[in-house]
Each structure stands twice: as C-alpha cells, then as structure tokens.
Length: 317
Ligand code: CP
Image 1 (cartoon, rainbow, N blue to C red):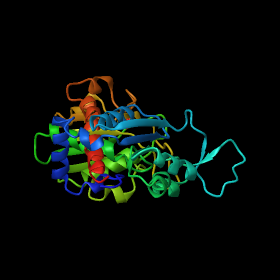
Image 2: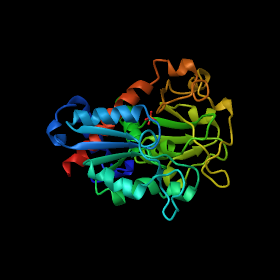
Image 3: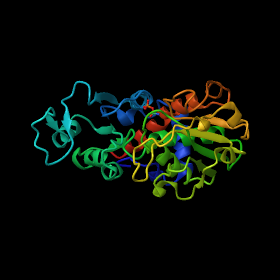
C-alpha cells in the first residue's frame, strides 16, 4: 500500500480483520519495520483520538514521530493557487508540502471539509496535493469526505462484539449545534456497504449523503422503525450534503437524540460513536454510560486501525 485515503482500499476484509487482530495481539512485533523511519502527522484541525492513536501506532512500530499543528506555530498557509499573497498568509502549501516531505518517510494528514466550496471539498484538494507534491506515502487522518482510520476501527469493533454473522447495524443522524462534515458517515457507509451485514441509515429529510458512499444501504426516515431489531446503533451528526444547503444545519430536532427509550426498540444493541460526542444532543448520559456503550473500546481500536495501515505502508517503503 502506498497511500491510504479510503476504507475501500481494504478489498479483502477478512484479511484486513486478521491483520488487525495480529497487530492487537502483538503490538510490538514489527518494530524493525519502522526503525529509523519518521512519521509526520500534520493537523489542520483539532484532534484527541487521532493524534494519540496514530502516534502510539507509529511508536509501536518503532518509528519516530513528529506532530505538526499547522495553525499553531507554523507559518499561516495559503492553499489557493493564483492568489496574490499580500495578506497575512506567509507561505504557500505548494512549498510547504515538499518541505514536509523532505523531513519524514510517511505523512498523515488531517484536513476537514471547509464548506467554502463543495467541489473543492469533494475533490479532496488538500490531501491530494500532499499525495501529488510530498513525494512520500500519505495517509488520511480524516480528510474532507472520508475518515477511513475511524471506519476501520469501527468495523474492527463490530467484528469483535457481533453476536451473529450478519448483525443489523443502524447509523442514525442525531442533532448537534454546529455544522459538521460528512466524512465520518460517508466513510462508515462506504465500509459497511462492503460487508454482508444488514446496514440501515436513518436521517431526517434533507440529510441524504452523497449516494456514491451509501449505495447498497437501506435509507430510512423514521428513526424508531429503523432502530427496531438493531444489534449496533452508530450515532453521528452530519450537515446537509445536497444543494442549496451544503454544509448547513437544517434541523436541531432533539427527538432524534439516542435515549434509553430509543435503545429499548433495539435488540439490546451496542451503542457506538466516534467521539467527541455532545451528550444529551447526540446521546443521553445513561446510554453512553451504559454497559452497551462501546465508545471507549472503539476509540482504543483506533491504535489497531492506524498500526495495521501504517504497517502495510512501511512494508512497501
Ligand atoms: N474520532 C476522532 O477522529 O477523534 P478526534 O477528532 O479527537 O481525533
């Protein structure tokens, strides 16, 4: 594997889950692979889990790690080509990227959707520039439209906890005060439609995701109906994808919050969320604190997910 930007690259899921299981059981077995190799983790946006888990994964593989928070201490970066740089931005991304590439062997990039241009977001302009100009393998730590390391961790978690071969997994929209990208639900849909699980997405009208990610999923608009018989409830907020509301919040409807009453409709489902989560907007305190909540093991599996992918990249260096 050279670059990693989509969970669809895991074409053999059984093999990917077996590789993840090996990494989880033998976290320090591949330290020679990363010896004298440096991972540069570039953050254009905030992070807790991705920052910690990817560093830990790289350290487990024997790598050196450099973390760069672009907005804290680096020069302010211009990202548009053709701009007359007479404002407050001192450096262009097109110089910064090859310089970053010169300092490392592998680059992780976090760059969220900016909601300034749907086309630029969905063309993945920032991470694609890293792929084009860094000269190094690049992996996504959440780009504008996908969060594949999160989805792989989610899928590993479902594999670990499922009680039947084909569990019913329901991804439900839930309310949030701010406009959030579609990267996590896009990626989760992309991953879950690769499985033979029963996969349902439920959302209010107007929150349809890009069909290129959801093809194969059952789409529902009645949350109570969707939750019936669910084995896993994956809650997430996302902003509208369709024009003219791209990147906007069009509902704050708290009847979509995942409560114990909602969970009572399920098949004693496990609750999942990628975190960070807004309590009592997305999920009630009692649900996230219940024994059925998987949010902590799901977050811990971020190490396994990142380490499995980094290992594959290191093998080809
Ligand atoms: N789930 C996730 O990516 O968490 P962070 O934004 O804290 O990295």
